[in-house]
Length: 332
Image 1 (tube, helix red, strand yellow):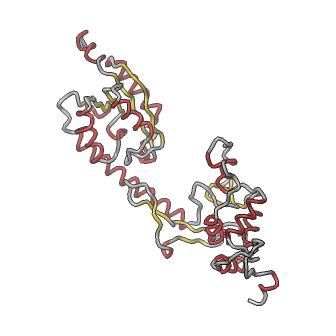
Image 2 (tube, rainbow, N blue to C red):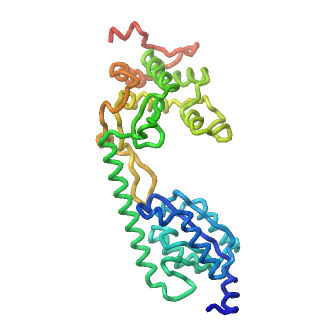
Image 3 (tube, rainbow, N blue to C red):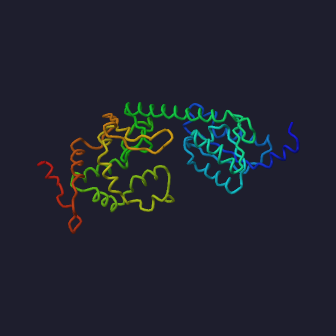
């Protein structure tokens, strides 16, 4: 039974409740849900007589990185002297990167006089019997590595099956409500995308195409996507809603998705710890043909490729020199 003196000692600790959840957790996601973590930690804090300063939640953030908004906020509160104890459900909630977990538990927390408790793992840095902590940390990291491999393999299989796995579909398309892995033409933007190709075939360079779209006040792709998500003018991207970028036009014209082909596996993460995506060589891309309705035919697509490679100067009237007109197409 806890004595009054022990209760007073426990109440000297001002605790932060920290919860985290991401796809790293795989099949454990239900038992690690934010609601479950909160319940466990609130009950523990009450039973132990801790004063809780605040709750910090990073939902959807990988344990392999510590670049998480509420984790950083918790660190600031530690440095400001507002918190001197951290409660997590288990060690993996703190993180799944063994080297960084060791830095915090063995160096940062002790230097800042912070008590760290992982309730379900029976880890408490206020006590001496924490020999199991380094082993659990290594296991947590291997688990994250294994989940990363399985996730990458699953995405590659979907790509080989011609399924769309991106977050945003190419401009001109939308996800089929019946199958989110399938693309269908967007009723609003499909015709705009077709016109972009038509302008390229007419000899308009990417800059000129961007100017045409801007002058006609057609929202650029990011703005249109934001509208579809229900966002309004509070976001910075709405400052110049019609300012189309030349590079975006080039990428569109080069995108073989408009031929009805699914091209995937263009980028990969460096490792399960480094989430930054890097480009991979074109020969390693995965392309599956005829997966959805095309917006342009092969002839239009190939001619557009030739046109965007030609650098044109504009005359004093802003018209590109050496335009390819409709009558010229038949001679090429």
